[in-house]
Amino acid sequence: MLLTIDLDSEVPIYQQIRDRIVEAIAEGELAEGSALPSTRQLAADLAINFHTVNKAYDLLRQEGIIRINRKSGAVVRRDSGSGPPQPGYADDWQTRLRTLVAEATVHGMTPEDVLQRCGDTLTSFHAQRTTKGTPA
Image 1 (tube, rainbow, N blue to C red):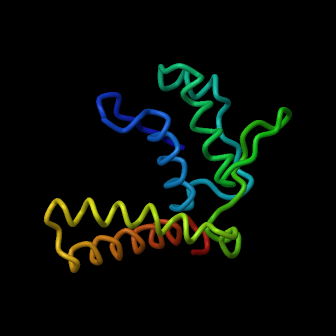
Image 2 (image 1 turned 120 degrees about the vertical axis):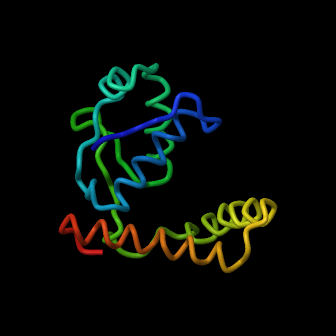
């Protein structure tokens, strides 16, 4: 997994790490059971504090996306083929989606453009999973 972060971004580094891992799972690059680098290794690779990586991993653990075990380290717990979402997830997701759509509206995007971009994004995840041989 190639993880790229932008140290100059307004988005906190731990959030960027979390987001890139979620995207890698959605794209089929990381499947259920895939091991993630240790917090210290990823921190060294990215030249950042390991507590920052730990915060990202803890967020992913709280969201049920990874599990952390002292023996096996951080492992992907869910991928898009893992069945229905956990209870309450859809409502939480819609709350976050509402904020993203509000931002798009404030910046002048039309409903058609928002829907087109959402569709394009979903299609790209499906295409990347299919290309990598992972059922979508």
